[in-house]
Amino acid sequence: MHPSGGALAGPGSLASAFAVDIPDEVLQSVSSVGEESYDDIFSDFADALLDTKSIDSVHSFISSHQHNSAPAAGGAPKPQVIARVAGTGLAPWEIHRPQKFVRDLVLRGRFSGRVLDAGCGIGDNALFIAKACPQAAVTAVDVVPRCLEFAAAKAKLRGMCGKVQMMAADLLEDDSAQQHAALASPAADGAYDCVLDSSTFHCFGDGDRQRYVAALGRLLSPGGRLFLNAMSEAEARPGGPRRITVPDLLSVFNRQSGWEVDLIEDSIIELHPTFWGGKALARLFTIRKL
Image (cartoon, rainbow, N blue to C red; front, top):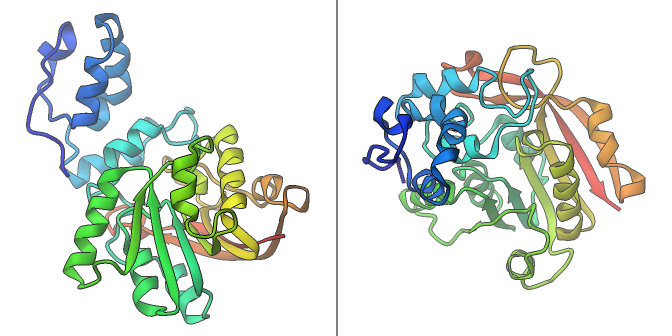
């Protein structure tokens, strides 16, 4: 699903000053607030709305600090920015192939049993695992429904309909019993033997990542492993998500919280070739649920 063709039609200077394509979710949010809030909404969305159909515009925006909730590089990306850019097929991380670290993990035989791709994006990692590892039952989850629509289209084109269970869900909503039951079905808590996190953890601020880690702890079985690939502090270029240091990671994944970090490896995040030369420096953490 791409941005709708309608221009913003609302009160105040925002409507008269700009005629831009706006997706349904933004139109709904605008219609639900008073006129006094239009300037605030515009401040948050202006740059991202200028041309979300242009790869140059999207990449320029993500490489700036404007999409982060903190002014310095490494602030958590604003959720509304992720919702605007993810699933368009143009985001820098939407490379239309599995990430290198995922391919390497497959070669090592690390995916088997029930596998959860947490923050699956447009589905390339999940579809690759399902095809390369027939012994794995893969579930792919993302908070942006458009990403799942894109992933489902890819599955159809590849003759893989039904090979990956796809769900739109917010793992931070730990009070949603219905969502949790659907994710964990049929085994309730501890339903998954393996969780893949490809550039999800580094999108969260401090509070949200505590909730995210708690959700993974409920979903992963004892002895199960989390493979977490996140941008590292060695990546010094401006923009992009929060950089994750080893102490950052260990502050939430530790024995006190029910985890053991088994392995830390240098890694990369593959990106679109026109963004940062096609890769960012990262670390791959192999983390075991105790």
